[in-house]
Length: 438
Image 1: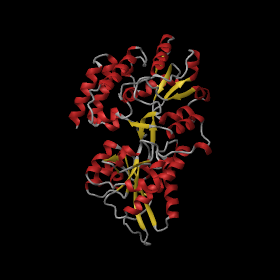
Image 2 (image 1 turned 90 degrees about the vertical axis):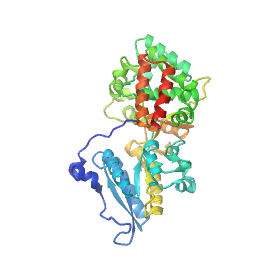
Image 3 (image 1 turned 60 degrees about the vertical axis):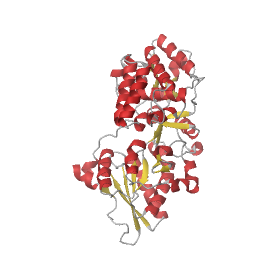
Image 4 (image 1 turned 120 degrees about the vertical axis):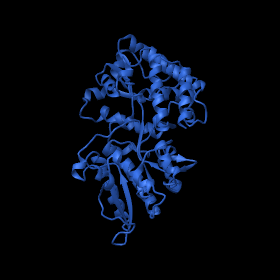
């Protein structure tokens, strides 16, 4: 998903420009595997500077301090960079086999070349020890696995609920749909009463992809689209074509925002916030806007609920499966001279992060959360509980696909909306783009 961190003033407080890329900012001065007092040093590089990611940085600092207190023979040398600078520096370090002992990684397509280059340590033993895997939400660690080995452990998770305006539904005599047929009826009823059924800004394409992925998931099952993207089965598949047909039908019914292909996601979101659209399918990163943000009124927050995408009565999918995926995770360098300590640290970090990230930063962790003792808005608790019960989570298409194929996917979804191609054209051209990018 294309989520961007805001630009910030952190550089002014640290080092300027490219010097930051090359050197980063560190809370420790040690450059050795062994510090001056004889303790082992684990180098940890992350993406949460105190300027732009204050709360996450505070969580990291607290976890590191707690770890060092509990493990007095190990020191954690912390370095932090902004998102893009981090990626640039990781490229430089990987080319010289000088990756930090522990670092941040993204799943699937981002991680794959590092794994193929032998740069990432296999973390399957960490996952197996004391059944750590059972602490993760189902389907999250798989995004970091290649050939049955796990090379990263996720710390964040996003899913995509359908947010809806309860007051608009009530005024139109509508209930939350439990089947796709009922969902189509909701769309038709809202359209006939002059309400935009769905706020969708399809200009960037990934927003339309969320809808297509849910349709494919519910018709063909939770693994079909991933198998097609991986070219284990052809994308020219009857179920994937039916999903394209149903996406096209929604557009023809007038389900989406007027001029959806020319609207950005932010522009479409305004329709939902202004209550001129009744539904909005988006990642759980929007939850604070509907629960805790000072920028939305309590009156509006009270009107907003969510539901998972409904199932087809005859489909292979399940309503307790989600489209989403882990955000970032942690890796251990294969070349690390303190690999055992690094693995112990990421295990410790993941458990502590899971306890703090949602309550302090609003970031849903990839590990399951016991909500029984938390003081959170009810919708946040409901989302977490649904996550804990999730049957599967299908990774966002643009994370799974090579970049060129993802761009084609977006363009084809726009063409479906505008009626320029048929569902059969969609699956055929997607298959061609995946083969070309392989």
